[in-house]
Image (tube, rainbow, N blue to C red; front, top):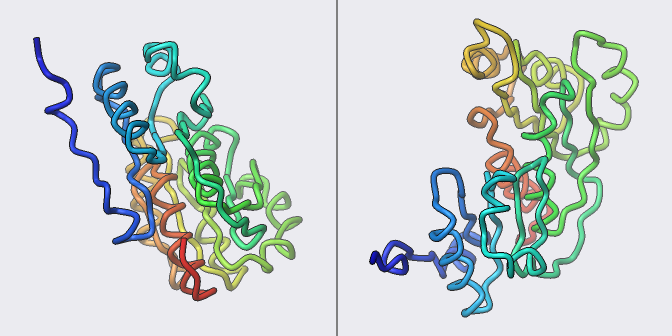
Length: 225
């Protein structure tokens, strides 16, 4: 039999190096591998953030984890021993163009929650109905960092970049028909934005956007994660 433990090497010093705990990307990992990761983390009293843990993957884990973890099926994230952190409220906003973009947006929100941030959440304000966004502009002008999550032509980050002064972090999503090409069109649109200073993460990468937002927030405030 394969010794699963030999396939796992946790990064136990990431927090001291970067200010972030190790995050476990669960897609393509087997349930026994994830179980072993969780067991090693629990044995060392380590908190973990798990991403891309599908509902089927969650159901396939050992039953004992169900009561020990905080799982959200929309974002496909789970927390093990999430540490208590001082809360930062409202300085970061997560904005989605459409309801179909919410899974990536929620991945960002849940990552921010894990690290003690309570972002403003604004959904379904894409430019196809521009009045929806304009109704929230005064609120968004107060945010230091805005994560803008959008598929199709990903116009939302550019529009926000022309309206508000905070840092815009674009998350192109795989939402869209045909030539949207699983988010490739949204990614190229965000990268070629005419709004100055818009930063772009990879397709559907709400986790990466949240980490970038936290780094930016820390730079603003002079604090640590």
